[in-house]
Amino acid sequence: MRYISTRGNAPALNFEDVLLAGLASDGGLYVPENLPRFTQEEIASWAGLPYHELAFRVMRPFVEGSISDTDFKQILEETYGAFAHSAIAPLRQLNANEWVMELFHGPTLAFKDFALQLLGRLLDHILLKRDERVVIIGATSGDTGSAAIEGCRRCENVDIFILHPHQRVSEVQRRQMTTILGENIHNIAIEGNFDDCQEMVKASFADQSFLKGTRLVAVNSINWARIMAQIVYYFHAALQLGAPARSVAFSVPTGNFGDIFAGYLARNMGLPVSQLVVATNRNDILHRFMSGNQYFKETLHASLSPSMDIMVSSNFERLLFDLHGRNGVALAELMSTFKATGKLSVEEDRWVEARKLFDSLAVSDEDTCATIADVFKRTGEVLDPHTAIGVKAARECRRNLSTPMVVLGTAHPVKFPDAVEKAGIGKALELPAHLSDLFQREERCTVLPNAIEAVQAFVAQHGNRGKPL
Ligand SMILES: *Cc1c(COP(=O)(O)O)cnc(C)c1O
Image (cartoon, rainbow, N blue to C red; front, side, top):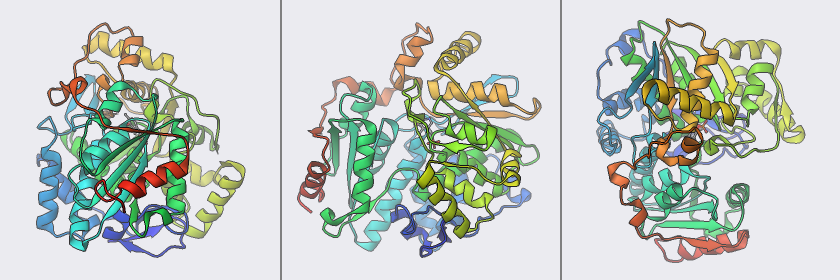
C-alpha cells in the first residue's frame, strides 16, 4: 500500500514510512493512495470473528508489504489481548435500536487505546527491524498522553516525552501518566496551558536540530496508523447488528475528526453505513460546517468534555481531500486560504455530497449533564460526558428509527467524575481492577517553565533511555 499527501506535493510513502512520518513535507496529511474495498460476501464471512482476527482482515491491506501476516497477527493478538473485556468493544443497548459501543476497556480507559496500544507495538516491530531509535514528543490535555505512554512503555527503541499543562489535568488523568515508571518514559508538566504545550510540540517538529539526527514521531491523530486502527470497530459493531445485510448508523463524539473519519473510511471500504453523526460540544467548528458550510475558527471554550475542546479539527483536511475529488492542488489552495483567513467553505455540490452521509449537533454542558442524568434514570448506566454528547446527538439527528444507531462510548465515566457529579448522580464510581491502586502508586514527573529551550534541552539530555542523545 502506498500513501499520498492531501496536498499533492510530497513523496508517496509505504506503510513503514508513513508510520514514522508526521505531517507530509508539503504540510498535508497522508492518506492511502487506493482504499481497499471488500465485497458484501467477504464482509458477511467475518461475522463472529474474535476482534483481533477481524482486525487482521480489515487492516491487512494497509500494512501489506511492510509487515508479514504472521507478525501482524501476533501483534494484533497481543494488543487486544491486553484489554479488560473479552469482547474488546462490547455493545450495550440503551434504548430501542440504540446502542453504546464501549471503547473504554483498554488499559487507559478511553478509545485512544485501540490505536495507541497498536501504534506502540508497530513502532517497536519496525524500529527493531530497522535498528533505529526515535523520540516521541506529544502534548496532551488528558487522554492521548496516558494512552501513548502506556502504548510505548515496552518499546525498546522509543523514548517518549509527554507535555501536559501543570495542575490543569484531572488527578486520574495525571496519575495515569506519571505512575508509569520506565527509563524511556518522560512526563513533563509545563507551567502553562495546553496550547503552550502544543505550540512547543509543533515548533519541535519544525526545527529538529536539537535531536541530533534522531527521528521525531507523531502520536496525535495526524498519524495514519491511528485512523487505520479505528476503522476496525465500525466493522465489529455493524457485523453484530446484521451488516452487511442491514445498514447501521453511528454517532461519534468528535474533536479532531479522527474517530469519525475512520467510520467514513469503513463505509468507503464496503460497510453499509447509512449515517454518521458528528457530535460536538460548544467548540463546534465541525457543526458549523455540516449545518451551514462555514468552517471558521472561534475562541476556545473549556467544557465538561475536555477531550473535544478544539478550535480546528486536524483530520478534517482528509475529508476535504475526498470532497475535492482527491485533487491535491485544489486542497493546497483551500488550506492556504484557511491559514490566511481562518475560514473556509466549499462549493455547494461538494457540501451537499458530504451531507448525504453526515449530520451534526453541538451539545451544551447543560444538555450533556441532562443526558447523563436521563440515561442513568432509565437504564442505570453512567455515561461519561463525551459519550453523553454522542447519545444526545444521535437522538436529535437520527434519520431512520429502524436502522440501528450505535453511539461510540469514547471514555469510561471514572475519568470525568466532575461531570458525573454535576449530572446529579450520587453513585460513587470505582476504578477498574487494574487501576484500583492508582492513588497509592509512585509518581514521576518533571515540572518545566513555559519555555521551549528548557523542554528541548531536557529532551536532548534524556532522549536515549534517560541518557543524552
Ligand atoms: C480524543 C477523544 C475524542 C475526540 O476524538 P477525535 O478523534 O479527536 O474526534 C472524544 N472523546 C474522548 C473521550 C476522547 O479522548
